[in-house]
Length: 317
Image (cartoon, rainbow, N blue to C red; front, top):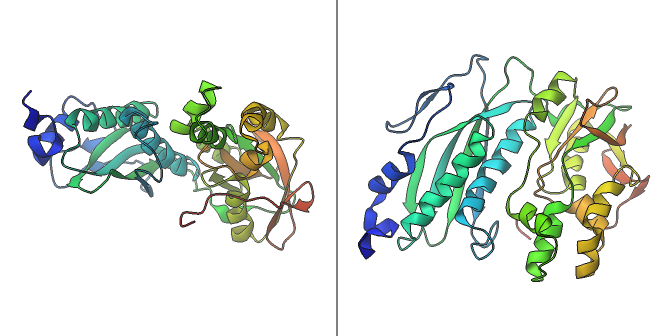
């Protein structure tokens, strides 16, 4: 391949797009995939759950830590988790990618491979998008989800007496970030969990079928995200550190290595994309109770007291 054909600018927008979509197999929900001005996605439910999110190089990922394949998986996973948190399942994604013209075409193809890898874990497809020149990598993903006849599980339904439960791991991404940031080569599993989250796919439907009264994914931090439920539902929430001890233990070695409090990662670390929900009775299999819903005013307590640490991520800090 000639050198001018090795970059996005050398190949050109439409030729790159042709390479990105060639040979991809769409799921049954996609009636019309890439190639026209819009795609057509069919949901028998008659309703579509829609969510969107962006990743910016240097802010949400680092290419000296992550491969393009890792970035692609992460971009799909964090959007799919938002759909799961509504009690739905992601079926299709639309992706816009901005990058400098001298970006190697091979990196764009690897990014797309990572996206398709993660989408395939859901039985979903990537149905369209856009490719533009930008001063740095910017990835915008819109996810479309299917409720399959279920009512959406909103943040506003929690009631006093409900059990707070979680499925998935907590604190792992924050621990992995600290290891990367401090150039500590221990615990490769935690380091990987920062690069590529592992949402508990399928558990959104499980929670909805079990009567979840509210639900969200842990993207900004457990306390911060439960705070949204508390505000929307006008309730208090009290978490139990005894019920979260396993998460603390899983990151305690990394915390010791960097001189951090592991509870800060469990309670305030984001990007694990676990699901946390409230249930009027016992949570379904695979979920673990971690607290209870109280009468208002809206607040999130830890063992009955206000947590003094940081509750989670803020985009503009």
